[in-house]
Structures are given as structure tokens and as C-alpha cells.
Length: 452
Image 1 (tube, rainbow, N blue to C red):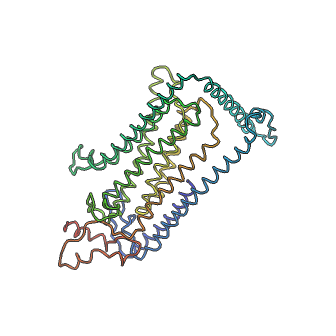
Image 2: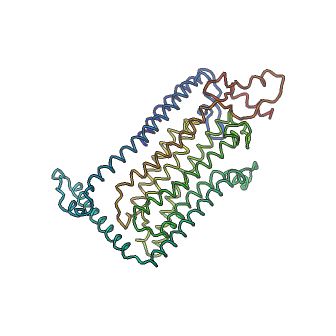
Image 3: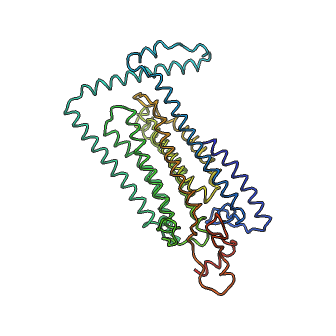
């Protein structure tokens, strides 16, 4: 993913440099839109004759994303296949394969020898843990099975209710709580609720899902890991898609998500609704990255301070949870790829933010996290994670089809007027192949807003 973003960053930054130079030559009026967005980075700043190059870069970006997903899945499947071949003869020689495996005499560095020894010791622990689990399951009575089924029913129900509550909270914040045009603290809070509430919900969901899976008491740690990943994926990715659909309904209309009947009117600070859609997705992306990163650091330091204060510092090191980290990135990628067709400047910004997030996550991992206590065989986990990555990539194709559609952008139509300026504000879709709508210039905003 880092290499993919680096390539896309190089391409799009070069494209924007040429684009800005072209705007300077043409005497384009540079302004700030929405308080923070330079208008020369927005969709509406690209002239009609740039449509082919813009569409080509969007399509090329899509191809790179698909290639990365395919290579990821193939590589993980290859690793799993090698592990499966190693275990082809089954149970009898499990310990013997490890104990009598030839030592690699090319290992000359002390740290490499230590790593190899640790790997062998870890394999023995995994086999011993699997045997212990198998013995415990075989000795389980009918009453114990009944109690276990009750626990799993309670855990699954709790998990399902938490996911439904998260969806309800996001829908409520998007359609009913957002708003307010005043300048007070309450109005400011209401305006930012649709952005902040999903991030808060996504921060709570992993804890609830972890509690539910713990209640269910799965015997195999690998199964428990997959349960956490699948449920967290269902919760957070669907949360992201709910937000995406809400934004498209707001600015495109509820009929097929591309109609002309909008729930919200476009802010007069934006030239086209594509601009506002792109900046809205971008805001959702950076909000999740920034708040999520700050929260992980804050929770880690706060937990350490609390346990140090009560003299129990050893309990401050929480177990590292791969599902949370994996789904977090997949969730953020949903917004990244939906933002790209409308606001391509997100690519270099995403590369920078993800680098910072990665460094912070590594810091928290080594300073405040501990290894999993119970070892388990994770040779098929990579393929399992790659499957979710592939599904996420498939969902990310939606915005490209959305941008390539022939539907006209549903923004404020010019009112009836005899002035030539009002009749020539918009070009028709037939005049602008590949672009649903394009305004003639930023200066028409004042006329447009005055008419509305």
C-alpha cells in the first residue's frame, strides 16, 4: 500500500503542478473554499479540455489499486500453500519436523540465530497449545457444551445489538443531528456531529466486539481472531458505506443516488457538488486518522499512568490486537478511494498522514503493547485478511462508476432570467464529455447564490 500510494502521489503531484501552471497562464482567480481548501485543487478547477487526461489518471489509479489487491492475494495464497505443503503428512511427525529440522548454518549473525531459536520455540508452544485445547474439548461434558452455547448466543446478540446501535447513531447524526448556522458553541457542535460521531462509534466498537468474542470463549485462538476481524469488518466498513451513501444522497439525490432531487443544497462556497462531495469525504478521512491516532496515544499514556499510580505497572501493557489495526486501515481506504475521483489531492496527504499514523502505531506497539499470551497457528490468517482487502477493493470501484456516469450533477439550477450571464452559467453534459457539470468560472458564484 505504501508503494502504491507513493506511485500515485508522484503521478498526481506532477499532474497538479502542470494544472496550476496552466491556471496561472490563463489568469485563474485563486481563492480558499470551505475555509481550508484551495480552489485550484478542487474538481471544478479542471477545464473541460482536461477531461480525457483527468479520466485517464483516475482510471490508471483504479488499475494500480486492482493490481495491488491481486498481488496481495496471490502472495498470501502462496505463503499459505507453502505452509500447507509442509503439513501434508498430518499429525504423526508434527514435533519431529520441528525438533529434527536441519539448522541453517548460513546463519552467522547473533540476532539471526536468536530469531531462529525463538521461532522454533514458538512453534513448539503452538503445538502444545493445540494439543491442550484438543484434550479440553474432548473432555467437555454436555452441560459444559450447553453453557458454552448460551455464552456464544449472548455474545453474538450483544455484538449484533452494538453494530445496530452504531448504524443507528451514524444515520441519526447524518440525517437529523447535523445542522445549525449560528456562531455559538452548540451550533458549532451540531455542525461537526456528522463527522465526529462516526469516529467515536468506531472507537467504541472494537472494545464491544472484543468483549463479545471473549464472552463466547472460542477454543481456538485463530477462530477467535477471525471472529474479531469479520465482525469488526462488518461493523466499520458498513459504517463507512452508510456515510458514503448519506453524502451521495445529500448532494446527488435519493433516486438511484444520482438523481436531481437533493436532500441538502450545495454550499454556495463550492462551484460544483463534486467539490463538496470530495471535501466531505476528505474531511471524514482525515478526521478518522487524526482522532484515531490521537486517541490511541492518549489511551496508552492514560492507561500507563493509571496502573503506575496504583502500583500495577505490569498490567498496563495491553495485548496487541491485529484486527483493530487491519480494519482501521481498510476503513480509511474506503474514504480515500471515494475521495479520489472528486478530490485527487487526497493522495499525497493520505501518504503523509498514514506515515505519521504508522510511526505512532509502532511507538505504541513497542512501548505499551504486549504479545498475545496464547500462541496459535496463523498460517492461513494472511489469506483471510487478504480476502477482506479484496472485498474492500471491489467496493472501492463504486466511486469510479459514479464519476463516469452520464448523470448531471444536481446543484442549484439557474433561475429564469433574461441576463446572458444567467443563461450561460452551465455547460450541458454533451458539451462536457466525462464531466457531469462544469461552471465557467469561480466569479459566477456570487450571481448563482444571489439567484438562489
